[in-house]
Each structure stands twice: as structure tokens, then as C-alpha cells.
Image (cartoon, rainbow, N blue to C red; front, side, top):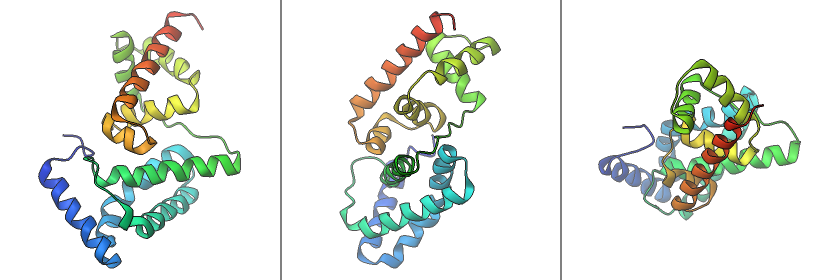
Length: 187
């Protein structure tokens, strides 16, 4: 089981922690300790800057603490809500600063996309996939990152970027089709 996909017992425990934090903000520290590292890494993969990532992570948890009473369980882990806040904070930073977004790619994940798109796993396929990924726009890359590099479920992706689970599926498969077309052309 992926760390992002929890069983019913884990979700129940997490909901108890969330409800406790709603009643007493001091109880939020349990959620903070549980998710700080994964939120920080999520942000760092997109910024490439440790200090900036720490600042944005602080903003994420401050906003989460302030808005915890508005949180509503939607069938996915609480972390999806935190990642949505992080996603929005990252996008806000890049809109305001005009900085270039960092894309952190892992060889293992590239191999999975290659297998998904053309059912081969070789170095040439990985190199071509890297070149094809560079042709995608930022929104498409974000979806690929969430699905293949961070192993998010379609439901979590939907919550994080503010679309339905089915829409997340459709978008990811359209991006994969786009990659197939790019890989068929010589570039």
C-alpha cells in the first residue's frame, strides 16, 4: 500500500486527529508532525530552494491551522487537503515572482511513464521520454508529477488540483496520449 492510500482504520484515526484539532488548535501539532516532511518535499520538488520551501511550508500549515474548522472529509486522506493548500501556495509564489518552476524527475518514475506510454523500458525510451516531457506545459507536468512521481490516486489528484476524480483520470490519460503522439514524431 502506498503511503498516500490509507485503509479505513488509518482514515478513522486521522479524522479523530482532525476533529481534535478543530476543537483545540493545540492538537494540530499531531497533524503538523505527521505531514511536515511530505509537504516540505512536495514543495521542494517544485522550487528547488530549501529556504523558500521552508517558508512556503510554514504558510501552508498556518493556513491549514487557521482554516481547520472548514475542513470537510471527502473520502481521501487529510493530507490531500494540505497538498491542495501547498499546490495553491506554490502557484501563487510562481505567479507573483515570475520565477521558473522546477521539475524534479526520478529515473524510476520516468521508466513507469515509458512503460505506460509505449510498453518498453530502455535507456533510449527514457531519454526520448525526458525530451517529450519537456514539451508539456506546466499544468500537464503537474498532473504527471502527482500521478507518476508522487503516486497519488486520481481521487487525491482531484482534491489537490480542485477537479473531480474522473476529470483527473481523463486529463492524465489525455496527457499520456499526447506523450504517445510526441514520441511517434522525431524530435
